[in-house]
Length: 243
Image (cartoon, rainbow, N blue to C red; front, side, top):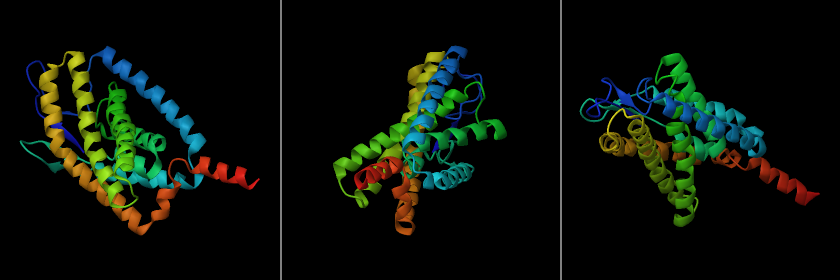
């Protein structure tokens, strides 16, 4: 989940601050650099998705995008006038794999910025990176690593997903704080304390929602989890062995 915050400290432009950063909070150089990084990684995600994604899971991409988009519309109060909402990166990555999940998150963030002005257009590259790449690719890496350590396909994977979801929110907030610090918008220590401090709490909600959603899918439609990343590669390997 991500938050809307008040002023982070001296030198910060007044108004709400979030991982959905508005225009004017990042310097032009930082905003341009984040656009380049995000576009390169999205290009890689497109190529990898085409190579490895099971085409039967394409409808699942649409359903996942719709669910994440709808869920992000619901905000809840945290503390001190701060509100949060679902991020959804780890959930998308677990259901679809990290590459397709990144594309889903990039599409959701782009629609929010273009249609609902939730985040600026100049800084959209940074927003996509912080939520759609750090939150998805980084969260999925943590999920896979913890899953291997905890071992098992049941409760251990749910625990791994919950921890990964929490870390994805904290990691995205930290990335936003670093960008604010480099841009000279505010002192880095102040930005880290404000952004990470509140998102540590918000991440708990992200973990609970992500774990509950994955548990529901496992109980109702476990076959959907078999269509995620790697489906095409596995099908090709099976065909090669049969030949």
